[in-house]
Picture 1 (cartoon, rainbow, N blue to C red):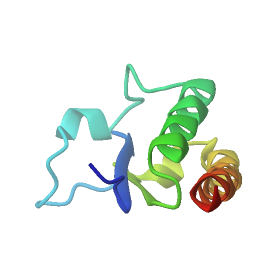
Picture 2: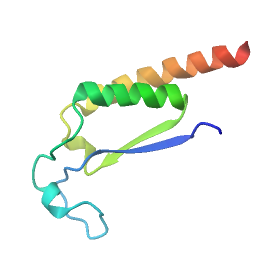
Picture 3: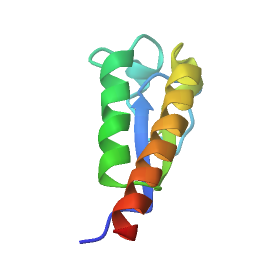
Picture 4: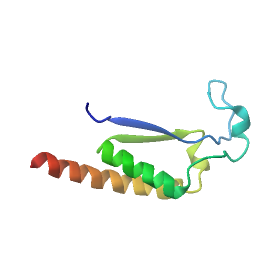
Length: 95
């Protein structure tokens, strides 16, 4: 089985909108969403995605990902890990 080229991750259930087409529970939109991953746990997921699907595009969605205070740091880490995983993948393929 080949690795996915695109990974879409619902990073948060929080949202400041109430779009009619959205599948999230409206109650969850209004407050902190319980059970969301910590920054450290989210970075581990990014590591797992980078290892399983090097070079894949990671789409952070939700809810509204911009409501996560750690989004910029997570995005920077994701870019770095994606590049590192892609480099490792290319080195393995060249062997």
